[in-house]
Image 1 (cartoon, rainbow, N blue to C red):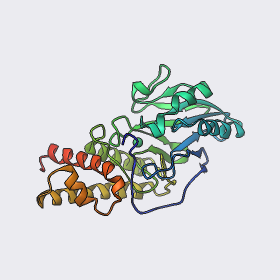
Image 2 (tube, rainbow, N blue to C red):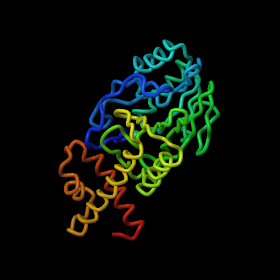
Image 3 (cartoon, rainbow, N blue to C red):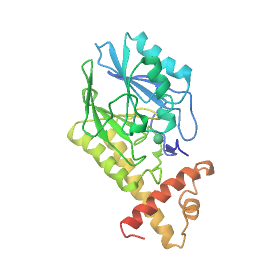
Image 4 (cartoon, rainbow, N blue to C red):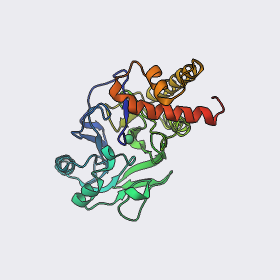
Length: 276
Ligand SMILES: [Zn+2]
């Protein structure tokens, strides 16, 4: 389940591929699955008048996809100058080394293992390329190394798997932690309130134009699931498998292993807060 991303929910938009905001274009990777929704969104980000572009999440190891990303940038008269990763799950990062080879770019990520070149990424870093400005926002929780990228000029945030275009994300225990995830959602919410961000450009699924509504939905969903788990524990369900069967009874069984990661993250959170 190392590429765990999505759990189902109400659809909130259509599939997106192509231009999304003035500075972003999505090239959809051909790796659709129940866990990756329509596939991984590989984002090309550039200033409108610049010949330099940044790519966020090259995606899976798929040469045709990686070449399609390069071709899309080149058709717009742009050279890819830098590769960034939102996190290390293979559906986002597996193709990064090959992509770096094709584009002769460095790869920057929070996790040193994923980097190619001498530069990492840390909270508060500001990346500037060809007039483009991207601010690095730490959003751990889906994984420990999850980052989002704030694109102030488009009042947008690229969220990787922290917020998806539909459904909800998996807190991938033990690497992902629920307390961190809730803090990250609140951090994204403050971007919408304090910095006027209104567009979510997710790692999977369609673009969301109501960023605050999406984050509030995620916060409410987490509170709801946590309450369900607490109630199930009070009713005598104890093991993660029992809790999944009870709380995720409405979810397709093929997604139960992913749901169990989230349940384990919730149990850890409840125990850390002295609630079980
Ligand atoms: Zn992921």
